[in-house]
Image (tube, rainbow, N blue to C red; front, side, top):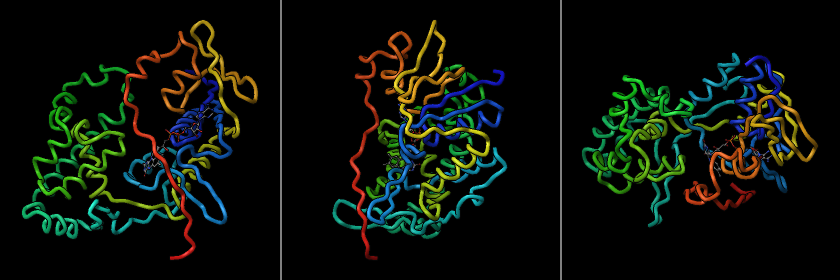
Length: 318
Ligand SMILES: Cc1cc2nc3c(=O)[nH]c(=O)nc-3n(C[C@H](O)[C@H](O)[C@H](O)COP(=O)(O)OP(=O)(O)OC[C@H]3O[C@@H](n4cnc5c(N)ncnc54)[C@H](O)[C@@H]3O)c2cc1C
């Protein structure tokens, strides 16, 4: 691809990161965002002096953020102060009991041991396997674009796939190490972030337990939107133009080639279009039928990740 004019739909983490990388390669990149601020699901809302992060609150896998910043000669510390939380989080059980999950490994092992004798030693083995999955799985599987099964036809990957436990469920895997229901719940919960359940998610994703219990839960001081600000600043310093309040209504395609975006601000020509809006929405609402990847019957037959109803509650007391 020579130097192209690229239009990106959406300014969430994915739109901002794609835009920055492409702009750095010399392309002319414009993001069209329907909201009045960048950030997508990680945007903010202010009311009566209260400020809310509207979406994410768990900063996991800090190395993934560092990998991104390093592409631009930066580090997270150039933009915000990261604090490791201790306890990492608090679990509210149905019977009103509470469990604080400590950041320190000795304290975590002690907690597990009080719940189930022998669980401390099992946690070592469980996390050792999870660490292998995190390093190999993230590098060789999660970061592949998954355009084709052929990407995975590689002897090293096929043999690794057994060790990574792609063919057994996380529920079975956790159950083979631990019996206490509280431990099982603590270890099964992180796959919620993948929109799945432990029963339907491959045991590969115990890599999430490594991210949770070994790498820790962090917080960017000032709030999660600090990440958005950092990514906007990287995008803009690489020449990305971000057009806010611009809703894309249609991707215009002629003879199989995308021509540009029809927005509520008029037509925007582009050689290449990237949509970072939800896949189903882009496929079914922005593209004409001949260019859709799937039929509406197909989409209706799929179970999409759950949505949520959120209440933003401001409290002016400690
Ligand atoms: C309540 C909640 C809690 C979460 N908690 C966590 C967490 O703790 N940790 C974590 O890592 N992740 C968490 N996530 C997930 C994380 O926030 C998302 O994965 C991430 O923000 C998605 O980024 P994205 O760029 O893929 O999509 P989005 O953020 O959805 O970005 C898509 C953008 O496209 C724009 N757009 C859509 N349609 C159009 C159109 N027609 N024209 C113009 N613009 C358009 C949207 O306005 C949006 O800005 C949470 C998500 C939610 C909702």
